[in-house]
Length: 191
Image 1: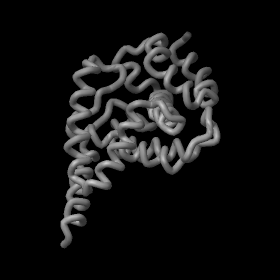
Image 2 (image 1 turned 45 degrees about the vertical axis):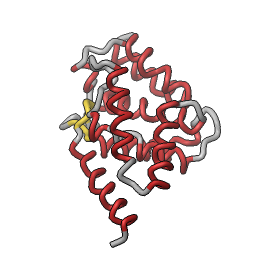
Image 3 (image 1 turned 90 degrees about the horizontal axis):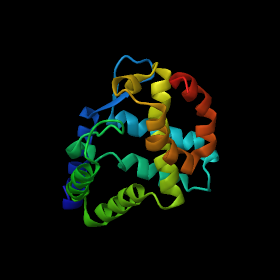
Image 4 (image 1 turned 90 degrees about the vertical axis):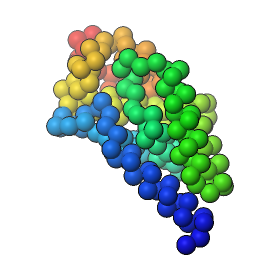
């Protein structure tokens, strides 16, 4: 087996561990929490389906690639729920180290390409990354609405917290989607 193929298969083997990372977000029927691999698949489907509602034109191929890769770092760093009590700076350090290790398993050309997409997603400055981040914020909101509050209850989330932690990023890339969800959100919070 070639060295390149061995590296690629090693990376894919390691990526399988994303299936074991449980998130705070429930699946829609509320029966269990989703894992990070399921989340990645679901937000890719959200992006593909909702791309026409992006605030600015996006290259959906690039968006999907970012979303496929964005949570791989949770293999090492774990999931940090947006409403949980974690230190954002410490989590960023853990995620950077995880990105170094995980993407470093790949052949150098793929490692650079994947890392660049991951960095672009994290920076959220390009239209593609802004939309990807928005979808990443919207999917858990829908899951919480569909499951009767899900983690909003667990973390005692307030409407104001949802506005500052989630809505700002969701509106930035997919304002029409957020506006559509807002009546249900307000009703749930009694706002």
